[in-house]
Image (cartoon, rainbow, N blue to C red; front, side, top):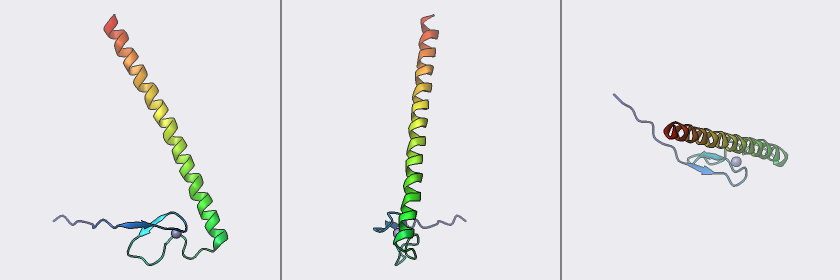
Length: 80
Ligand SMILES: [Zn+2]
């Protein structure tokens, strides 16, 4: 018997910018934090996001170079 897990909808918190389940009255990330702690939370997640974007950029560049090398390799093989 297959049981399905319902997909929970989430909302974005106006205070911290993170997502939390829609059925909860408060954000689970920042409801208990004061303003200083909220700034720390935003800095941590901001750094994580920029690091992820950098990783994706490097990965995309490597993938593009790999595709160019493959195309060049096939064209050299076909020419000879
Ligand atoms: Zn929040």
